[in-house]
Image (cartoon, rainbow, N blue to C red; front, side, top):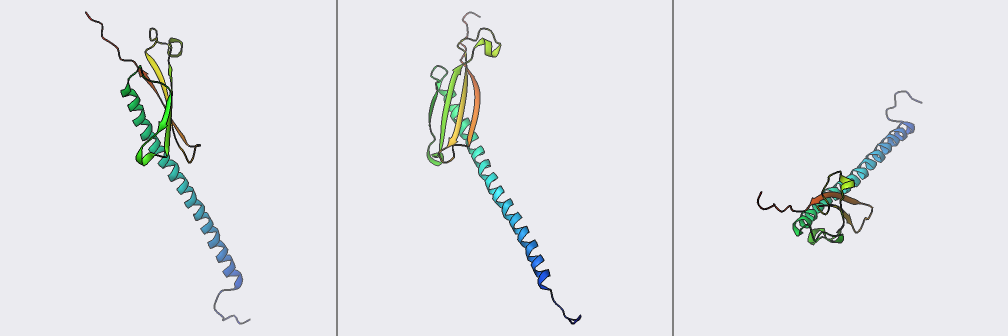
Length: 136
């Protein structure tokens, strides 16, 4: 073989192609993972906003009409659904005396129809409106 020939051997080309292929596989895996994380992040952001909106609606309805219920959101978020569980809190759970019938724990869950495994939960304690005592 002539030592003055220029160029790459077949083995050198194969090693270079293998290195490039491994790099592309790694990059594609990273891209796939970032798309997945972006989808989860989008759900978390939308669900948090919708849960806060729904909780505000429940608070505006009034303490006495709070009950466990479920439903859907409108328009742009029609693929999201919500469910509430409402229960009264008692003295033995809170350690506060004289609160009978004044506190309710609201658990609100927001999820999507297409992926029931993604669930956003929000808990809030709502207090009944306190009427001022006349003469004080």
